[in-house]
Structures are given as C-alpha cells and as structure tokens.
Length: 312
Image 1 (cartoon, rainbow, N blue to C red):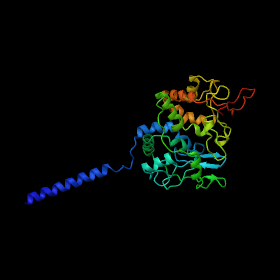
Image 2 (tube, helix red, strand yellow):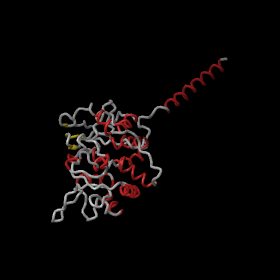
Image 3 (tube, rainbow, N blue to C red):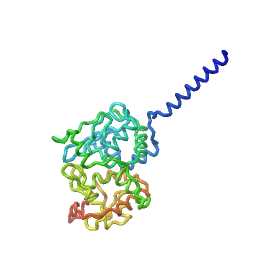
Image 4 (cartoon, rainbow, N blue to C red):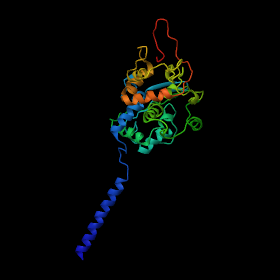
C-alpha cells in the first residue's frame, strides 16, 4: 500500500512538473518571439538608426534625442534601446506591435505621426517581432527622452484620434497576386519598411499625406529640405533615369550627373538603402518604375556654375 502511495505521489509530482513546463512554454519569454538575426535585416531596411541617433551631438546609437523640425514644432526621437527605465526594455511583444501597427503607446496614448507608423503599420507581424528581438539584443543605454517642443495647439494628443480617422488605416500589406515576386518585395520595402512616402509625398495643412501626389516630392520636407519627385515622370521626376542610375543612387548615393545626394537622403543611403541587398534594391527599382508618373516640379534649377542638385 505504501509503495502504491509513493508511486501515486511520484506520478503527481511528475504530472505537476509537466504541467508547469506546458504552462511555461505557453508564456512568451522576456526576449520575445522574434528572431534577432532576421531582425537585424529588418532594422537596416527600416532605417531606425538615423532617426533614433542624435549623431550631431554625438549621442549613443538608438538612444534618441535627435531633433526633427517641422511646421508643427520640433519632435525629438525617443530612446529605443532596451533600457528598463528610459528605453523600451519593459515593452512586451504586444506593446511593440501595437506601437508599429496602430501608433499607440503602451500607456494607450496616440503617437504623433512624426513616428512613421502610417507606413510601419504595413509591416508583417513577423518582421515587427524580429525587429523587436534585434533591438532587445543590443546594449541598453540610460538616457531620458527629450520632450517635444510643439507649437500651440499641436502639442495636444487628443486631436490625433480625428487625424487618424482622416489619414490613417492600420493593417499589414498583402501581396498583389497579379504582380511579380520582385515587384511585391519592392512595394513592401518602399511603402512599409523604407517608409519612402513619409518624406517624398507632399502633405496638407494638417500633416496628412496627399495620396493623389504619392512620391511626387515636396519643397516642405523635414528641416525645410526639398524632397525630390521620385515618380517616373520624365520632366520632373526620375523617368529618364535608367535602372542602373536608380540602383547607383540607392547604393552609394551617386546621381546620373555624377553628383552625390546630400542632406537627409545622404543619411538614408548610409543607414538604409546602402545596406539593402542588391536584389532588394533591384526590387525597389522595379516598383518605383511602375508608379504613376506625376508632373510636379520641386527641384531648384541648377545654378550656372553647375553646383548643387535636387537631392540637397
């Protein structure tokens, strides 16, 4: 009888241990469900380094503090290192996906669209989780976020509910079955990860993208920069550029006239497009060349001395 009792007790302990393992397996680990190796590629494609590093003031990578001057005031990028107090170290997978997919913070407040979640919302869940895994594999940096310096009344967040209703649609991109694999990859890089439209599409008075002028450029870019038309219009866009011309611009920043991109685009080449694979750059070219051509002149005429370019 005692032997049977001991066996039952042992079985119960074993079953309890197995139940614990089953429960533990169903709980997301602290490091998240993504893959850091794949996340590194997503990180490069998404251009996180440039915006979240205050390079001008020799800030630590991804510790935030970089200023973005806009017609609505000055935004400062946040710390996205896994620091538990000043970064995103306490964020769960759900928190991270919610921020990218819906533009909502872990506390439930809406983010200003200076954070390009209108583009990032199109990312797949897998890419979002891989990106989080990569960020959480990096060393934490203790650096408090700098508050935004917004002009009145743009610093209030409650109007963002109405802004989102007008200009934001959440949801991951889906492949177009009528297009090639390369075209779909290019579309994903341009419209989601690379968030090219955030700079290359002009905006209205409330900061919403003018969808009928998609990628047609603007004279009112961040920091007052002129952002070029990258539709295939032959007069005002890049319609006369060859496939090799566009690939060269994305790879090393060299333009068809042998000049080089400057300003923010120079950083984009260094931190993002220059890190893409050759196949990804080719996919982007295929997609850009398929866009509707829009006649919209934003570039300055070249001075007689030949200096300057429309990517300054």
